[in-house]
Length: 350
Ligand code: 1CP
Image 1 (cartoon, rainbow, N blue to C red):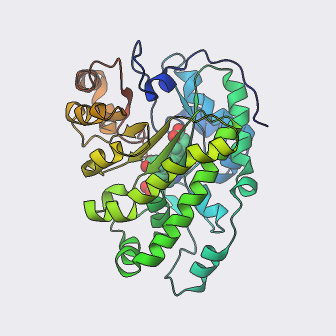
Image 2 (cartoon, rainbow, N blue to C red):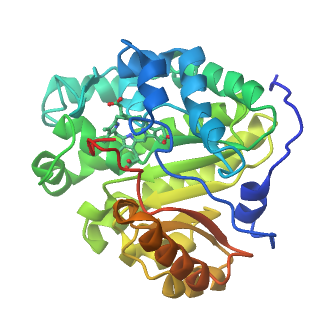
């Protein structure tokens, strides 16, 4: 039984994602919760990052922080969690190293390794193992009291596989490329397994109260257009094709779906041909050119200010925002204002 919540006071982002004409563009910021907020460090205290994700009370408090600090200015909340909870649910250990980022002590070696077979053969139960995420979502919806919609999310199969084989962030993606070019069939089997888990995970997030979902393909831009078409797009498509079906099976309504394939500027056309409602853009796109392509296919765009503009101060920010408003057709249809990637923090790792 899906939980019941207070009626929405602001559903601007949902209407915009569905392609409706709106009074103004909705706005939120990728990584709007986190290290740049002093209250984040306070609420996190001595807890490890993943401990915060696993505590519905802390995760909901962190999710609400930007909504409360910038009251009335932000039109969506995104649940405080991480894309790497799926590899954890698949049985891999992931630790968050302070000021460095995620680290897998035992990344996947090669398809000949027994770890690969174990991962492929293991039955993964995202309902049970990620129950804390659903609890955090339900509690956050209760605390939001309809102020703004809540976004759920997951990592895209290609990005998650990259982390699983690299063991963390990477500069050259040597392991990921080795898998891609040397072991394409085993890579595809792994990507498919991850894609299926993403569908179930997102469906359960919606059941718990998420009103919109976003798939983060943060490492899409490491792929050539041909590799993206072979190794990322089919799995992104699998998620967008199967999530609505799964929601229907669970007796739930379809929710707007966003895909953010960072760096894959060449794929805008093909992403507009998928079942995603919203296509997230990084700052490599010219707003007007992207808007022309997306509107012809009835899609909404999200983005795309260079996060670095925040270092430029009010004047520089105003200039970029004006360029976006003009480029994205005036902001009354088909555009969700956001940065082109996550908010930068002074230490630059969040
Ligand atoms: O407001 C929010 O957006 C908070 C929720 C959130 C989201 C949507 C976090 C919290 N992480 C994510 C997604 C995420 N995690 C992505 C996709 C978005 C993106 O490209 O930025 C990725 C790639 C990760 C992996 C990850 N987790 C990194 C990147 C490391 C690298 O390889 O470059 C890092 C630094 C983290 C840790 C993390 N996740 C979230 C926060 C607040 C933090 C910082 C933790 C801390 O040090 O306190």
